[in-house]
Amino acid sequence: MQASSLAVRWAALSDVGLQRVRNEDAFLVEPGLSYAVVADGMGGHNAGDVAARIVIDTIGEVLRQRLPEYGVDARASALRAAVLAANDAVRAAAARDRGLTGMGATVVVANPCADGLIFASVGDSRLYRLRAGRLDQLTHDHTMLQELVDGGMISPEQARRVPFRGMLTRALGVEDEVLVDVGRTDLQPGDLLLMCSDGLTDMVDADELASLLAAPGDVQACAATLVASANAEGGRDNITVVLAAVTDDRSPNAGG
Image (cartoon, rainbow, N blue to C red; front, side, top):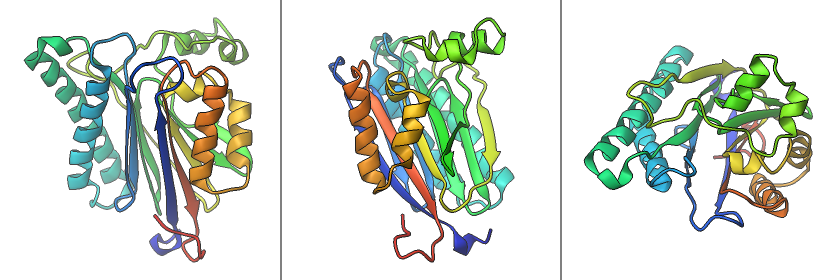
């Protein structure tokens, strides 16, 4: 697919939910460089909102310098470097301020371009792709629950019925070194990407997500519907969604 044949329409929304007093999620969308970031401050830890903001700011700074590079490999390297820099920045901030000790965050970064989608993640914030009515989770959760599924101790169906996905096994700010998952896949006009914090996916199951994403309408209205659905199910956590609708840029509605 030629670069001139692809465009992305973005939408994003974050909500405190119904049971939290502050929003410890953060997001960044940069249409010009075609990337977005969702970070979720770790619940129960000090200054989760501070950690999420540090992650967003650091990744944005690195990617503004590096994403003008061309080629899939260069973009994958840029995303990995940005997430690693965010881990360092969270730890450095906690070291400077004793009141921030123990803070951390999850993160998912996505960079859709004409030569394909590059993404990176740490933790349990997720990236999905809806294509022709089929919803695929592109990221892999770093949780104890997911390890039980991977080890064959419970089925994916059983895991979907667990109200909470379990303790994180990987997050930014916890260790000096962190393993970053980096992936790549193709993109087609008509694809819809969803990036989100677990405040959405703990409340709304995959079947309902697929139905809501496939409904006709504007992507910003879809984002609002997703947040409202999570709140209708109890809104136990902060809810953040970023949508990226991939279009043929010859379409009159294509744009950033």
